[in-house]
Image (cartoon, rainbow over all chains, first blue to last red; front, side, top):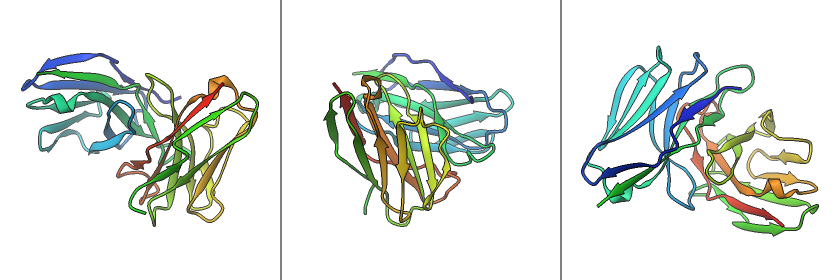
Amino acid sequence: QKEVEQNSGPLSVPEGAIASLNCTYSDRVSQSFFWYRQYSGKSPELIMSIYSNGDKEDGRFTAQLNKASQYVSLLIRDSQPSDSATYLCAVRQNYGGSQGNLIFGKGTKLSVKP
Amino acid sequence: GAGVSQTPSNKVTEKGKYVELRCDPISGHTALYWYRQSLGQGPEFLIYFQGTGAADDSGLPNDRFFAVRPEGSVSTLKIQRTERGDSAVYLCASSLYPLGGYGYTFGSGTRLTVV
């Protein structure tokens, strides 16, 4: 069973700080990686995707991928209280007939304190 | 439709009963996925449809769970002889690209409670 590991937190940062969320995965051949944000009682929403080694920036969000270390991270700059949510790391399965479905980590709960 | 629609939003059923959960994907999305999420956990994969056929049903926990998508659009997840351990939020997602390379969009979920 392919696995995606995340620190469950909670991670608490002050408003305006950088929040750093980390994820490791077990399937060395994985090619597609995603970060979803889930507010309490809501369904996950896609915020970032990354496919190549290095950094990908979108507004206050930066996704980082290191395939050699099987490590994905999400940085949130200038954190706001509205960023308080659970952040789910997801990796696309890539073997047999399972191409397409995502494997999710348990999520890291982020709390941004005003 | 504009988004992935799931009905009902909440379902309470007695242990041993049969339930059906419905998912209406985004119009034109050929790939459809079912997940379930328990409290404090990430979504757990159940089954993936490409068109009308189940491309991967390896996540279905046992033969009490079954899903169909007869016309390649709406899907129904069916659970027989429900157990208290089936209580969870059941999430449906759809994708324009079947390999999910662009991630996919979730519906708002059905909260199933088995009492």
